[in-house]
Image (cartoon, rainbow, N blue to C red; front, side):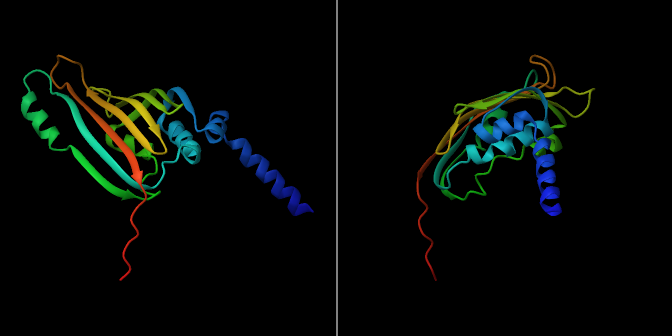
Length: 191
C-alpha cells in the first residue's frame, strides 16, 4: 500500500514538471512561442514529435538554392555557383530514425546563443524567426523558416542572414527543401 502511494506521488510530481506548453504540444502536436530559448523549443519539439511524425518509406526530396548575397565587395556570382553545387535531388528509403525532427539544441553549437523570436508549428505550417550570436561584438545570424509539412510531405524555405545588408560581412543564403513520400521501400534481398 505504501509503495502504491509513493509511486502515485512520484507520478503526480513528474506530471507537474511538464509545462502547459509542453502538455499542449504533446496533445496536439502544435507549438506557438515567442522570445523563447533553444532549450524550451527543443522540449516542445520533442513533446510534439509523436503527433507530427513523418511517415517512413520511399521519399523523393530536393534541396535548391534560391538566393545568395555576399554583400559589397563579394563575388556574388561565384558564391551562387558554389552554393548551387550543394543542390541535391534524391529518391531513397528513409527510416523513422532518419526522419526524426532535427535536434534544435545542436543549433547553438554552430550559431551561438539563440532566441526564437517566434516559432509556430501548427496546422501543417511552420513559421519561425531565430536570432543567434556567438559574440556580442560580431554581427548576429537570423534564420527565417517558412513552409508546410505533413506526415507525407514538406516544402520549406530557410533563409540564413548574417550582418546588416549593404555592409561588409553581410551574407544571405536562401534555400528551399521539398519532399514527398512516394511509396513503400522495396524489401531488401535476402542473401
